[in-house]
Amino acid sequence: MLKSVKTKQRILQISFGAGLIVFAFLIELIAVHPSGIYSYTKKGYKEFKIGFSKEKVLKNINKQKTIRKIKVCDPDRIFELKSRNPFKMKEDLASSDFWFCHDRTGKDFLFVFKDEILERILLQRLRLGKKEGSNLFFQCDPEILKDIDTYLAGQEKLDVFYDTK
Image (cartoon, rainbow, N blue to C red):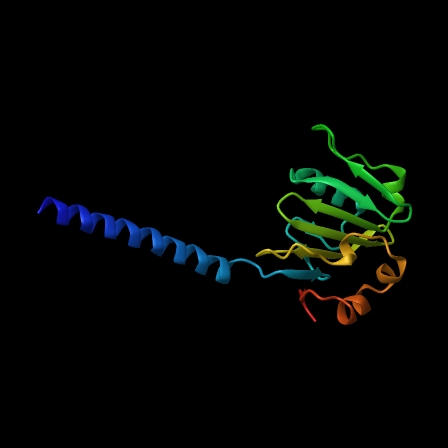
């Protein structure tokens, strides 16, 4: 009698664990954003709003504890936090219209400015073993940055999601 109760408990424990694994997998498939590039041009992304000044964007970057590095183009420069002190607006940062930020949680941001105002946010999310990201987020290629939409439409291998068409 005691042995059959223990066997039933063990079967119940194993099936409960398997059920949790299936549930976690379903959540991953349904509730989490798919891999790809997300383009925000209307409202923005979370606390980064379209129309913000460079200073306001930098202030919000400093609120993100997972962003520790900003790469800028024209002039090419990398700003990296080595302590708890926040990023400061430097001349190279202020003069660049393209800011690349790599988040420790696996997101890559590209902030595109026009006339000192945030015009577009591109966000790259890589999931489920996709380690190779877009060239758009890792190099300062003036041909790509000059016409991002053409690059996304023709040469990008990742899926591209727009906030509005």
